[in-house]
Image (cartoon, rainbow, N blue to C red):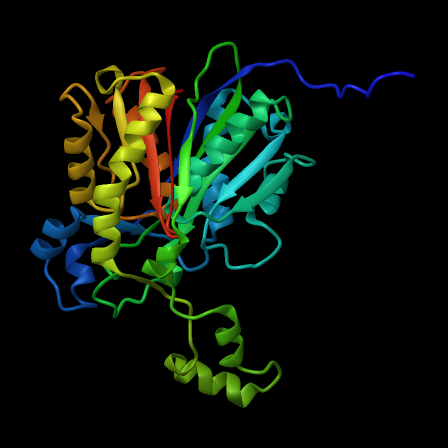
Length: 352
């Protein structure tokens, strides 16, 4: 009698980031404009967050549109086309359709069909989750090239009258191609979540509540009335318990980043760049201090010009670091994303 059938597996191999691309919407909103929405000042916003300007996409530009631009640039940088992609992963919380996934539409636009395509929802940590998944897919032999996009259009979910969030959120997309490599280019991912604090960052209303306040189709009079008084219908604007999130990020995320360094066998002084989620300049400063990063490590501060772009912030900051020559090609960078969930993920990568 023969023994159990042995499953065939792919040969072991490594993964690395092959190329990066970014989409930055052309519309720039400075703090002076924000202060026409809320009672605040440029000085207060800069002192509290480090934000000077942020980018908002045009009303008719979708997360898929922004993703397509960033993805095309990442593929070009990697010397690949859509036909070379085996899987498309889009990290976002602002795709306006529950289904189909933004990734499936994006894959079709890029000519990547029949690549696997799916979205992941992990808030501002979504891109780092995507990099973890892509690295595992490549190392496991399921895919050779994986496109990972972090994209959000938070302007669609920003209440411009909310003094606690109106100055924070912005739009953008960043993409990377993760592919097979002879040497390790993506370290172990340290990730997790704390759903007990889920209310710290959330939508103000659920889709069910939105449906209950929606205008019945076909009733033109009601449609016109709703258009005249849009505040009568609820909308899932984002709300955030700022101090709760700030304290959590300052005290909990530096140890996560250190664990990612340890897991990769890398010391702080070995890094060329630190690329954290661009949520708040004060959080970034606190993490730099706790990690004892030397001055030789470039710290990404894309938040100054881009604001908080959620899942797009880490890849956008990565693209800026490389474009400005602040870190060398194939240099080591520590990435960390954290936010809604509350969720987080960190890893050390070799830059493309």
